[in-house]
Length: 100
Figure 1 (spheres, helix red, strand yellow):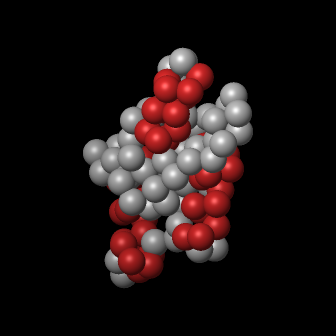
Figure 2 (tube, one colour):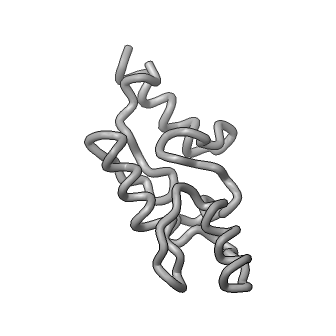
């Protein structure tokens, strides 16, 4: 069952005790402006900030694993995960098997 899935970070694959820890991690490690260190709820918000405030383009999410750097995915915690991503599919299958 997906409800029992351990919270994990799409960007770096770390697992967390609860969703609050995951959200804190994402803000600190993946959604923090590399220029001014401001924290954001998601990568697209940070990308817009970087474009408008720093007149620059965010090409990839900071500290993301290869293939997971897209700054325009609207991921917040476990919401918005790209279901067509092979790693997400594998994690979901594993969670279902563990919960069965």
